Length: 305
Image 1: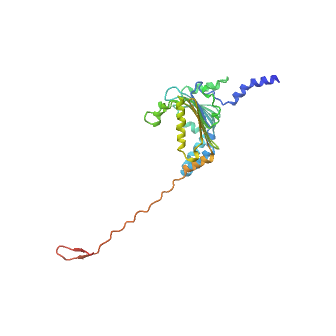
Image 2: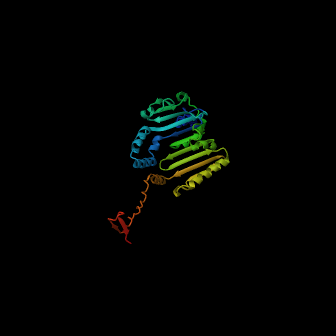
Image 3: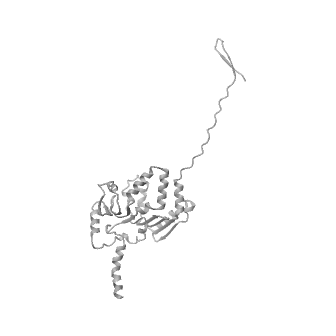
C-alpha cells in the first residue's frame, strides 16, 4: 500500500505534463501568449446565426463563408507566443494544430513568415530565427519549464479566444496621426492584460487589466460602467467588476437569446422611409382676353375682368 502511494506521487508530474497543452515552442521569456480555436468558433450557434444573417443580406457572403470554413474549419487550435523586442515587429511564433488547407499556406507572405510541418496535424510558424529555435525546443526530449507568462492562464485557456501578458507598444507600429488610437495607446500604460472570450450557449468574457496605479484601475471601472449605461436596457446589469489594488477585473455573461435578439436587430433591413407625396402644382389660371386684329400698330389684347 505504501509503495503504491509513493508510485502514484512519483507518476503525478508525468500525468500533469501529459494533461497540459504543449507550450515547448513558446519563447522562454515570452511577453504575451494566447490561443484561438477556429473550429469551435465556426461551430458556435451564435456565430452560425451571424453567418446566416450575413448571407441573407449579401448573397456574395455565402462564397466568402464557404471559403473561410474550408480553410479554417479543420484547425482545432492555434497557440501563439510573442516576444516584445522593442521594435515595430515583435518576435512571434505560432503552433497550429489540426488540418491546415494548403491554399492558406500558399497565401502567406513568404518573405516575412515561414513555417515548418512537425507532423500531419501540427505546423509551426515563425519569423526570423524564432522558427528554428522553436522547432529545437519542441524536439528536446526533456520537458521544458513553461514560460512565466503562462502562469495562471489555466482558466483562460478554456475560452475559444484568449491572451495573457504584456501588450506590446503598438503605437510604434502605427504611424502617428494615421489612427486616433495610436496617440492614446501609450497613455493606457497597462502593465498586464488577461482576456478570454467564448460564444457558445452564451457570450462569456473575462478581462483583467493591471494599471499603473489603483486610481487608474478605479477609473477603468467607471469608464466601463458609464459605457454600459449607454447600452439597451436588456444589457444593463450584466457587467460584473471589481478592483484589487491596481488591477481591474471584469466579467460579462450575455444569455444566448439576448445575444441573438440583438444580432437579428442589427442585421434586419432598414425600414422603408415613408414617401411624402409631392405637392400638386396648380396650373396658373388663364384670364379671358379680347384680341383685336388689323390695327396699324399690330394686334391688341384687352383683358376681361
